[in-house]
Amino acid sequence: MNLPPNSDSSSVKLYDLQVVSQMCRANEEQVLKMVEVFIGQISQSIKEIETAYSEKDFLKIKKLTHKIKPLLTYFGTSKLEQEFILTDELFSKEIVSSELDLKIANLNFLIHEVISQMKKDFNIPNI
Image: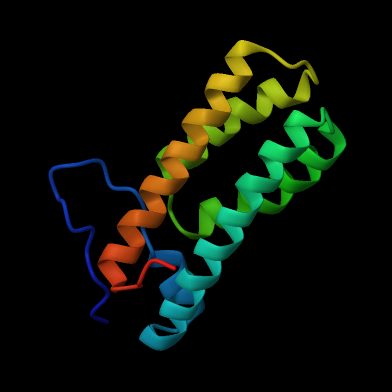
């Protein structure tokens, strides 16, 4: 399979598609579709988390985080996954705080980094 490597080998690896590739039986078109779905779902989910947090809707946040966790594992986004786990621990306290504000901002940044790298590696245009 000729999946693109992470384009900047000097930086931390942002994702690893080994599990996705196995799930797709190394079908490159299917992997690309999965990457596109991941980009859409993770983008939408972080927006929904930010909205739910601003509304102090911690039940909705819990549901969204439960939905996102497997995606992070499947797509090998270990740095993002670690940050997400730390943020999720703060969400579980159900308290709005400046620490949680910073964690959400950092999550958003990391998500955009992963998405940007995937779009670059797979030649996916920005919409």
